[in-house]
Length: 397
Ligand SMILES: Cc1ncc(COP(=O)(O)O)c(C=O)c1O
Image (tube, rainbow, N blue to C red; front, side):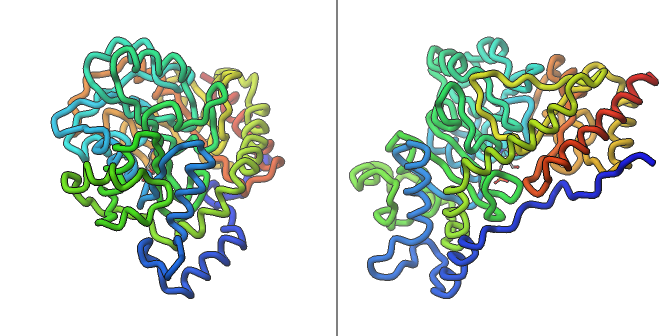
């Protein structure tokens, strides 16, 4: 009898007790709206922003309703207008090009490499096509950020970092989200902190911060923010910046603050699991483990491997066989988007030419969640199952 994995790939850990207590205190107060504070009270949302800014070493922070909202707000705040082009990754998820489309701009997709990062040569070749790059650190893979910033600085491109999968990660000692003009994070259940939905935006630029705060729906209450520029900056932007409501509330902020304090520990725990799966997969015939550069500190909340240049049928067979043994794999090569998996050619609102290099790589990407509810033994078992099924399909091909 072959072994079968019985765990759930979508089961997160419970919210920590201290966060539940903090949430109950907010519920008991009745003051859930971020600007509904008692005399002398800062409010959970303002405190969250202050703490996250300090944690990331950023001057300013804004908490918002979702990661996608943070992305769209950043685009507006750096001055993207309808009809503008915005560079972005061909390998990413739907909310990233969606944020570009939501401001009436047009995504220009940049190819992906076998390391699953943005192709810096293709980026350099396309650098004259846009003034903004929405850089998605998709599935936590960081490109050579020093080189990327050189290319973008030389071309006068403003970089917005989508750190939905890299909260807690760094490149060459610099935290993800601190290379570009703006860093955006998601606090949605499957990310590195869990408030159901939620987003965070950080920047050192006072005007970007003031515009983002006004846009998020601060009305004239921006003075209640603790990680915001001074009133003189708001004076410059407050009548010209539309209110596009998307605030964070005190309940979610209360749940997030204790989780952020635990981030480094959680990163270690994810990486222990990631490495257990990675070790188990190494040397599997036909399977390419994605290289992680020494300068990258990643957060292994998911793992990807490549079945490069396999036929569609063979990849589907491997995914099916793993699924029959309880191992849920996502394939980025499916012609139709499935669940959270999607490809650049399924975003048909954008007029995108074929990207042959990305087509080849996407056709080979297999993606798997690594929730913290998995034990190290679970991870070893999952790797054994994948190894056996991938090898069987590869050898029979
Ligand atoms: C790469 C990436 N960027 C942005 C987002 C948007 O985050 P949210 O779901 O908080 O809007 C997601 C969500 O899945 C994502 O995977």
